[in-house]
Image 1 (cartoon, rainbow over the protein chains, first blue to last red):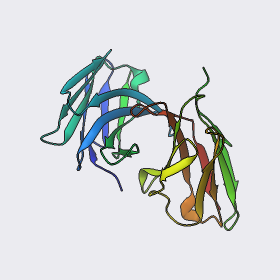
Image 2 (image 1 turned 180 degrees about the vertical axis):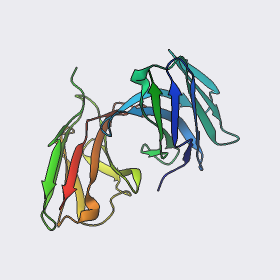
Image 3 (image 1 turned 45 degrees about the horizontal axis):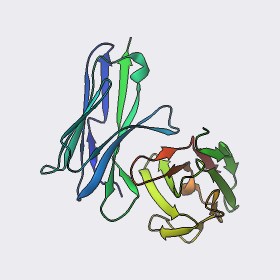
Image 4 (image 1 turned 135 degrees about the horizontal axis):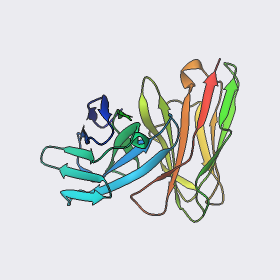
Length: 111
Length: 112
């Protein structure tokens, strides 16, 4: 079963706009990761945030983590058409190394 | 270096047949994971290997599913007596330490 939910399920924006998506989870975590998937195939790792971190940046990506609310957000700034993809959050819990994924957010960036 | 590779990229089989899916992890990665992705269930964990042993098999959906890893490298996921509900994309990932997992391109399995 999936650890959490992602919101929204789908997002359509114009190139240059920011895209924000949220992820909620249920159990305690060791870290939370965000992945991107193009065309329903392999996942590409974007960013990892540890449970003792609150915010992390990588290029145009900004991730926040609120462990008290069991939620995370991913912000993509100045979006490009190439950012069109599905984005998944995944948690690595204290129980083991496996990742538990959210349902994903489908992002469409229109040129 | 080379990433995680999986073969075949696509597999079409008839209901009741056995299939084998292969994963070649990144060289030196001790941890290997199998996941599957289907429309109804999203991305689900199947099994985790550390070296050649599988400390977590909790995600295997039935005893028709098995996996092995040899030489701390290549892994094979076997599905016996395939059913239509086994149709999915099977993803393999490897990692060196706990944290970022590197995913292969997946095998799309279609059971007719």
